[in-house]
Figure: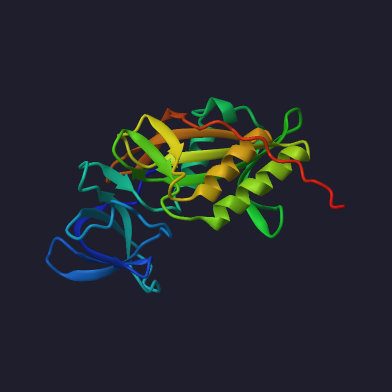
Length: 248
C-alpha cells in the first residue's frame, strides 16, 4: 500500500478524546489531526514524539490531517497507528499470494454481513474449498522483548468477533484471526492477557473451537506500508470450555 504522497513529519503535542491530536508541522504551525485508532496507543502518545501525517485534498473534510505513524520514544521504531489500513494491507497480501495460509481462493469480498449485526473484514470463497471468514486486527503494541501484543486495552468488540468466528467454524466454514503488526522490530506475537483477560480467554476458546490464528509483520515507511514476514504466534495452554450443567 503506497500513500498518495509521502507522509509529512511533525511533532506530537498531545492526543485527546481518542480521535484527536495536536501536532506541530515543519513550518511551526499547530494543527489538529484525526487519530484513526480507538485503542490506548500505549507508548505512542508521548508528547514530543516524532510522528507522520497524511493530508487529505478533500476541502470538505473537517480535519485535513491524519495521524498515520509515530516514532516510539522507547525504541525509535516507526509504528503505524492507522487502524483503517490493515484490511487493505491484508487484501493486497492475499491477492499477491504472500500469506500461504490464505492463498488459493477464487474470490475475496470485504465487509460482508454475518453473525449478529456484524461484518466480516474479509470473506474468501472458492467452489472447492468453501468459505473462509477472516477477521483482521491492527497491532502496534510492544513492551520489552521483541514481541508484538494485542490488544492494548479492553476490547469487548474484539471478544464478540471471536465468538462469531467460532460460530462460523461450527457451521462448517473456516474462520481465521489475522493480526497485522505495523512495526518492524518484533518476531513473535502474543495476546496481552494482563490488559484484557477476557479477550485472551476468548481467543483460547476460539482456537479450541477451530479458529485459526496467524500474525504477519509489516514494513512501515513514510512512502507506504506492506506485509512482509510471518511472526510466531505464542499462546498459553488452551483451557477446555466447560460443559454447561443442566439445572435440577
